[in-house]
Image 1 (cartoon, rainbow, N blue to C red):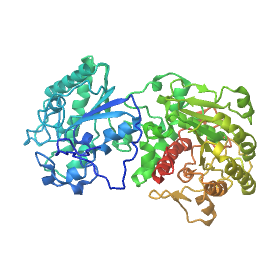
Image 2 (cartoon, rainbow, N blue to C red):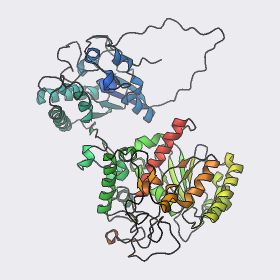
Image 3 (spheres, rainbow, N blue to C red):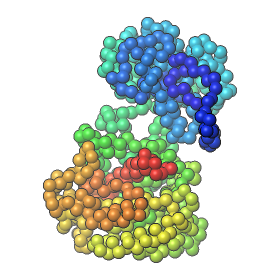
Image 4 (tube, rainbow, N blue to C red):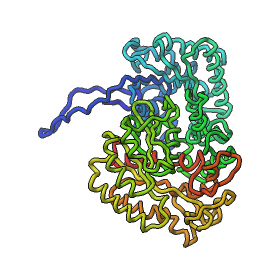
Length: 601
């Protein structure tokens, strides 16, 4: 049973349960055992104050009640949906929230309401009762504490506190936590400017010059972090939440994770001087096929422009973090089976979890060498099947299968020997086919095999075939003629705007009849989508958004990133590019399956 508003807002007394005469109690749901313990200390943001509503739901009379529940805010507050609770669910951790709306380090949010305590005061109380009994700190021992209080000191209609006083109070509180919980890791969390600005625009009479106030908050947090380190508090980590696709990315102060940005607030593998680290951080002129700097800049700027046009896809792509995707794959083996394009998809997905990959080494897919040898279907083109072994028993594995007949005759009969219950299988065939008839024959055979043996196989997703940008066909398809190195790839239709992505819907838009087939995913996806959907296999929608990304094909086979040659290849991409986008497409599919209630991921 959960009381979803703040503990200080009213009381609930439970006298008895009554059930219908024909009713009965359900069996208790199993509890997920966890040894992870997280504490979040803060104010109304940590509480989740008003998180079910919007600005129109809030009035000054609702907010300014000094005691008890002020009407609407209590009705639209659900602490179980606060960021603290959501983080705990993501991490499968027990969460203890110690927070009080309007509280700060030295000043209460409302100067006229002295009854609201500061963090250092209420932290020792047993519950929300003012001056209640002392809390038993042995009752819950966190391994990590997120200290998020302090913003309210800069949100009152009076001067900000003295920096020396505020910093001293903050550091004393950090020292207190360190003594209470020896060995605890403490994150000094700084909220983004939007946390202040979203409210200032609605209730300007309470807050003065918002940018100036946030600048003070920002400065105080940075100075206090430095002071904490100088005081020998090595267990303290300072972390400022950024605005995702906002000013920090635009100013170059933050790099999206999907483009090789370092894990925040700290990273370990990012500091290792190894080829894998350089590759996964997309260091230009590093291990091929890494895009040159100019193309990485173009890729980021393209999606920033799409964000400005209102693209939800672009915004989500640039804001995606490993922690968003991790709950869907934790503890599973992800099998990516297909051609060299799928091989690069594995590279991108593994790199996204760089900090989750302790060894950074390629591990064999099995200890059975005979089984591995049987799966080396094209040893002359490789590569050797391998897995990225992540933490918590999670693996991302790939082995190559270019053709449908290879998949049906060899791979699928052997797959049950490799997989375990709960594994996930992502499949594609298509790029090696240059006509729809032969692809349809193999896909029909695959569909029949899958229908007959589905109970033996892992849960399956289908990845759409990738876009090609060959200049000899208006649809970009490879016609069987390899191009010389100096021959450039071209946009589909031959011109930049021949076919575009609608930023609102994500649909492809064109006024050219000869490009209508492109809107369906070209002939390959027109064939494979139909059969996958007929078999009830979820399809990853990765075609549309990559149609405009035609500049990043060069030097896949070249070892000179500065050369800029396509090497006759308008199929493969350099990194970061199409393959990194597929990591986000996979996340979107997981979210959709979860929303549809047809998946336990």
